[in-house]
Image 1 (cartoon, rainbow, N blue to C red):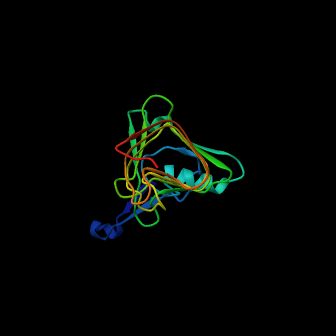
Image 2 (cartoon, rainbow, N blue to C red; image 1 turned 90 degrees about the vertical axis):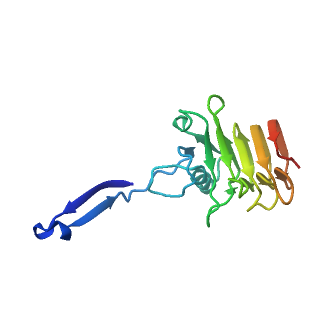
Image 3 (tube, rainbow, N blue to C red; image 1 turned 90 degrees about the horizontal axis):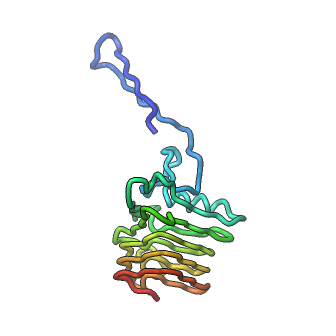
Length: 193
């Protein structure tokens, strides 16, 4: 985060002046409360992306973890988190033990997570519950199988909408072992297997 800037004038000649930009080197506090729609990983920007919250929850282990979204994120309307397919990014990977809940807002404005038509959204390797989210524009790239979700453990979806999800193997949601429990799921232009 930019803190300030300074410019000096050496020898009275502004063409020889130097400019300095100071950046804060303080690390942000890790959190499981998402406060940005950006898909970023940056320890000094004071933003907590969904990717960062999942990564942090994966490191905690030992207890049940819940990821929520700051009310300020949806304060002015529905929002979409568009995942990056840049090197080191791709689908969101859940490896937490024993389990993780990703809980969107129960009322008011909604949150969508988009694969931007180029990647899958969740690769789930542990007991995971997802509620009150829309998963959209996923094509399964980066997943073992499935368009929006690949799960090889216990998966629970409550009030989740999956739109425009396709995959080369499996359909929108691919459950590979474990159990799947779905409550109030809407599949739009997507297939479930």
